[in-house]
Length: 159
Image 1: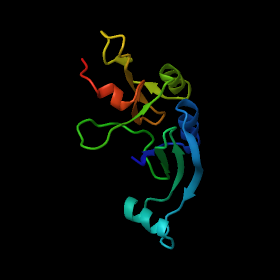
Image 2: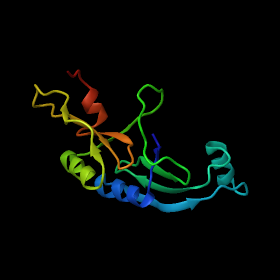
Image 3: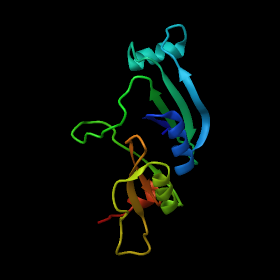
Image 4: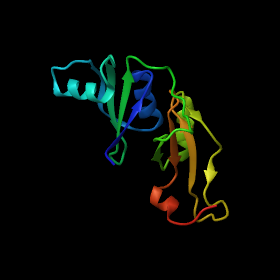
């Protein structure tokens, strides 16, 4: 996987949240993109967002393992994302951290939300301390946090 694109409500707050709460690194800080047809980027944005999108701010961040997080603050937007589980499409992304509880604490500190109690996949087996929790950024975007890699977590059955 190369990267994931996220719509956010306020770029400076988003960059602060994703760098300080989740530990991502800035590759390209907040930059403005305007709606125009003169450049290849301008034409690509019109093709993707449609005419009249009005421009946006963009920033590129990266996880420790090199996965990009491309954030868009659209000029024309609703203020908060609402996940509709009745619709088809991507509804979350997931991160993994060795500092699981620290990330959970920082998510709340920087305006995010913990959506559920922390879950252990194998509570009966202390040799498998795999944990996960659904979290939310300050704009309503859902993401999961894993204590171990995806491969470790799912390489055996769980209850």
